[in-house]
Length: 430
Image 1 (tube, rainbow, N blue to C red):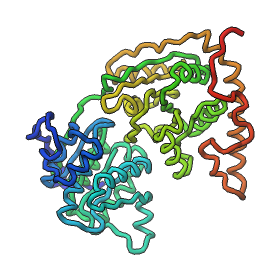
Image 2: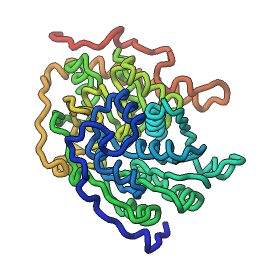
Image 3: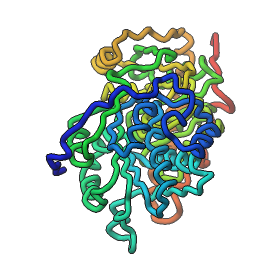
Image 4: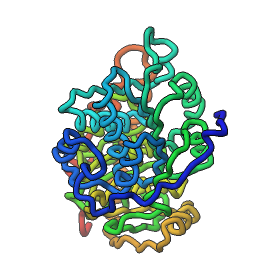
């Protein structure tokens, strides 16, 4: 990304004129109709990043926003954009780039909710470069605002070439907002290439987890991970769970395992079709399923308000991903639990996580004899899960039919729930 000299300057945001005890968005300069929309969404007062970024954005400054997950970043860029759109309506006004389609859909919903009374429309096309190159009549020449949300993750997912292409075809005379959880070297490079005299708004200078989050770890042999997972789901029954796995295959396998034991589990990973991914997310949000198994595609940005427990079934390779994963619970002042499985192969990774968050985590209490009572039934469920994965893989290879119908593990493959007719219970004795 070629950076001009004039774009290389950056200033820290001054202390906001409006302090954190601000009661309304109106004090930040947001117009009345959008303040009413905030009230309707239950946004009673601005968050820290909104207090810092919105007044500067309304003054026409380029913004670099550094804020942790769940900090209200979407409102920090959506409100200034909608405010400006009210003053100068036009057809294609702002472009928001995000690392995943789930996050794009969520941001689209918030734009439409905030702008419902003024007729705002948004779209989530995906594959923007393909549209620019192949969709007749599509261009971004009239664009006034560019937002890059979760910029560090966009670049970590190797979208740097695509971002370069987009920067070359959009107007230089625009406002640019760059939001990121971390200021990496790649993000600094992108900032120099894309922003003019930006103001930096940082609301958290170190990695930390919220106070109401109870964090635990479990040190267990790798071969018993499935059994301990089932034990925890039984012990904490009645809660909603997000379970993070490191690969798409393990996400799918674990979802099938739990389904065979009678749990209402559903997967979310990158090898599912987009409609299935959104379907899984919506079922979990609507509380039709109590367990969402996911890769890190769901670890950042997604606002799922009712997650009670996060389980790191596979420990994250990058310590910072731990912050994003456990940030799915204990949101908006609520409490929550996070339990991280640590096997004999994960000790160094776990020590890095403890170093990053600056605390030693306690052990989650378990009754090992009760865990071992589950082994036989879990082993049988593992066998059925392997059969279903194999059958599903063979279906996808067949030229006829629509193999994608079973992506969410809820299609009947003939061996569902043979292990247990209902939710698996601990069996004592025997």
